[in-house]
Image (cartoon, rainbow, N blue to C red; front, side, top):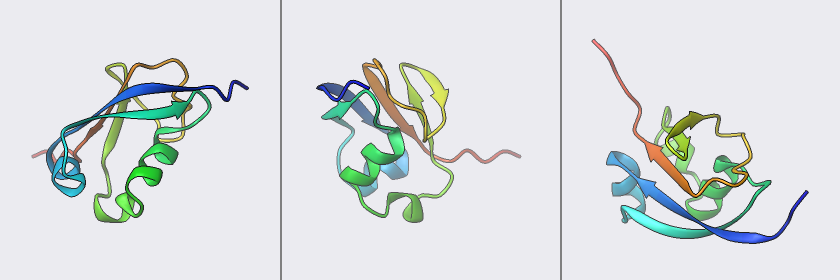
Length: 83
């Protein structure tokens, strides 16, 4: 596995933006890191505060436990409720 660090654009929306206090941030990641690991590093306890949040890598929804690989952008989206 490649442990070389690179920079990914992190976008936050709705409650995630309010909780972390920013909309956009550049963060250093390793290809084998998962969105879950990255967010817990930046905001410990995030998943207890905003359960049901979704994540996308390069505009594609993905699992919180999928490696970021060569993605350039990671977005955290609020939980969606329907009616």
